[in-house]
Length: 396
Image (tube, rainbow, N blue to C red; front, side):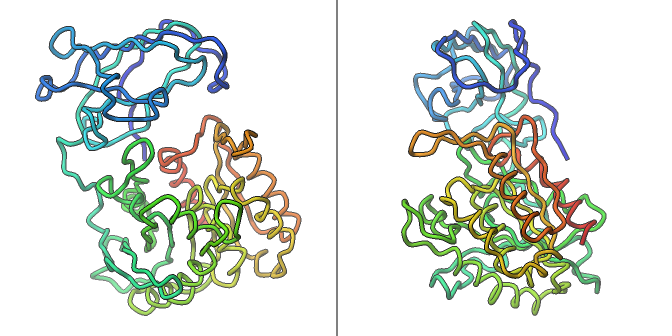
């Protein structure tokens, strides 16, 4: 599934061939003009947001100037050479620009090589459409499912394939993390605004859908990280990833298998996640190779794991069980991160190192996809998921 670009960009300077480069010392002026916007909100200010203002959707210093009805302009100075990303809002993430169908898309972007002018249009505003984008097949399994290993309660969503209620068919099950970001823009809250992964739309459209069980993540950043780290580290000496995985295996999976028509075996029990969700997914495969037959590991935050990921792979003992698993790894070629010590991390190199070692130690069936222009975020995992699901479902 995909979406057409929201605007045709008119770049007056020829882009460089590389799609991303580190910020250079030279600074440039970028003039952005909106040539048309929805008439019903023309009395309201339009804001521009991007990394230049730390993605603040209501920055009063970044209000577009209206020159005529439906036409707005802003001049941004001191923009570095390289990739320039931005979005338009009416002052909040709930009032983002949208497609004509009312759906959110990736940040707009341009490659800056000098002073640049960009023209674009805004087809619609997100808040003029229903807040929820979830498929009718998505339901809340429990708004406060008890996790005894953590002594907390979390919301659990479940996707049931079309025809489930009136049939007898049994289905594979895909367990996923960050549940509030998977099905519904109304519950997602990304760094660059709400953007769901579209998991339900993918399942609605494929020939062989599965049951999807999605677990809500902790409400704050640090809490989420502690629950997705398996090994302690300098920032978080106390972590709960092993307990979280034990909950999925010992409590949640038995509950799902008892109450829904599943195919409970290893070949049809899967897990997928992105970023820290990708890291904990990899650990699920390594720690429970008798439970999970396929793992979708997207942009795993290996760099935050302080060497524990490679050490765990190097010392795996259940080689026969892991050899019968399937791993789909995804990373973007532009997923760069700055560590606290100032060193730059390239996600795809971490993935390549981990997969090379995993192949050496156990040699499971693997597919490694490095997306040339991919960056870190829900938009890229949304694009990657259909191919991931197809590969997992075909190779079970």
